[in-house]
Length: 114
Image: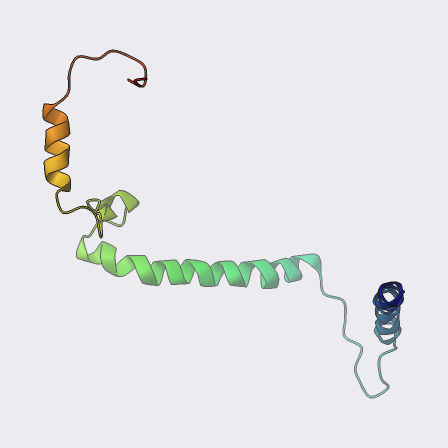
């Protein structure tokens, strides 16, 4: 019974709370405030899309131009490094060499045994 009352209370609050906020959203502009003109679509597009895009391009230039001026490669392939195994077996090189020396001419399959 307590669970049912709790569920009904949560559902009631969840449905009533958004309705109380909608009343303030439909309020008129106060008397002392100005009533600004509507903003055109092009102006909104330039402000909301153009300015962030300009900031992104400017930041990219600030990051890449010094490297390009020094003659460094900015391609992602230029940042490759050799793989490293931290905390691996101490005899890993010996185990790899032993496996290479132990190979026979097996063909196909997973080379499983029963």
